[in-house]
Image (cartoon, rainbow, N blue to C red; front, side, top):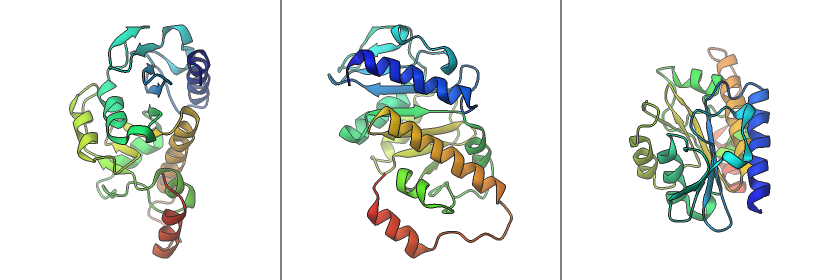
Length: 212
């Protein structure tokens, strides 16, 4: 995709997230890889509802900022996913979405498999989501925590903070993020009730047929 088209797509899809309440205020950040290996990134303290395509932070293939406004302070997160997932990572999205954050607050939430296996699509689009400890916004240690996972996960949940998803392109990454938030909402709405989750065999078949 040409740079001008990617700039427009980032802003259009970010506004969609904002308009539907999946991002609020100046929270969240998005990055996407350019054909030349560079990155376009949403600026720090910017609102998804009012992004300017011309002001997106522009990094070259060597990771140097060459244009646009000052980038998000969460660059360590984005860079870690691009470094560890290589060609699999064409975009990274980080939100502070309500239900996923709420689910991360419960002490008994599974740290190795954050989303209960209630429906197939989170398994198909995300695989197992790793719950990481709390990190203060902008803490470079977040990037190190991602690197320690050695590309084993396409999505992580930062406890008391928000989810991060990496995908092949901006559209599929945002769709996967939306699936994560919907699954977290379903998990909270059914919490404490007797539910019929997917069986181990069903999960195995989904995992074998679909790769996050």
